[in-house]
Image 1 (cartoon, rainbow, N blue to C red):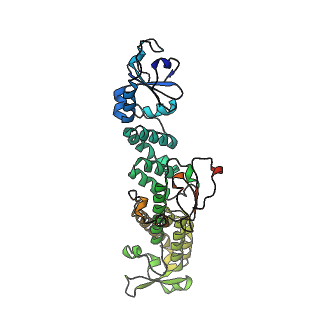
Image 2: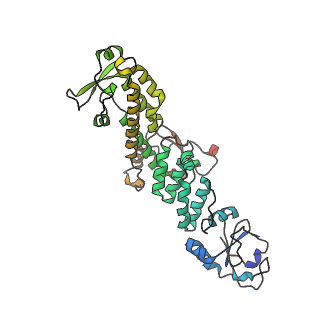
Image 3: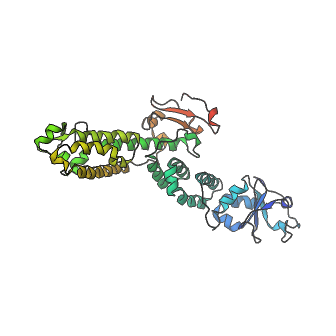
Length: 381
């Protein structure tokens, strides 16, 4: 970043509107020699760092030469050379000035967040919030949204994005996600593990009717004593139910199989809508229709129960909070931190966690800096 003699700007190109105003009193010149004519007070309100650079730029020698247009004495404008390209600075300034906001990609947002931190421009960071929360960004790439929100300190956006990651597998090459650091990654992995555990517990039977079913019990055909015919045509099993007189209830095996199917499916994809998956519900309904007493209502009972199960899974996941204010040093060791986030997946991590050691037997990391991925070597951490 340098401060140039204004006479050297004659060959520079002008930026597009609105950054070519005749009454501008500052020129920001990019690495590709494009001049952005801006107003000192507008820049000062948005960026204290740029304001400081502009103040230092007043020390360039005065001259009576005119600008390339010959219309104004060029020495009245302070000139600051910036290392950014014109396309980057143009995008940045459009979030400093009160102009219509352009459509941004997540890569654009990452660039702007970096510039906002570099030049101390919190107004630009604030204006990124709405773009990060665009539905298409949360649906298509919630992991990147989470990384960018964590970098910018937008905890509410980070929590929303983390929730959207649950129904997707994390990208295998996490080092390709801009601004994702090791601390944010550990928190996300831990959150995903805790959510999976909470959701799976909702569908777990293992000899006991789940506690939430006992609290919200309704007389579904598969949770009530059926006729002797049902017992003869369907496999049944006994589950502990503290609410009943005998502290047990006999239920058809198809309901237990359905719950087990939901539990296993949640381990693969953490989506509450799995409870309504026809592939899981159909076998239970078909089995229940073999009983003449249950045939008339098993379809409706399963449909209603799957909705209740979906809500219970959603409630369990919502009860898990992403711990964004906890630093890694709150754990006694890195092993303790990663134990809570253990996974059998293989991840490519950013270089800032290259000091980590091999943590546990279930987690494999490939650490690499900003290099082409084929150059990243396997690291036994």
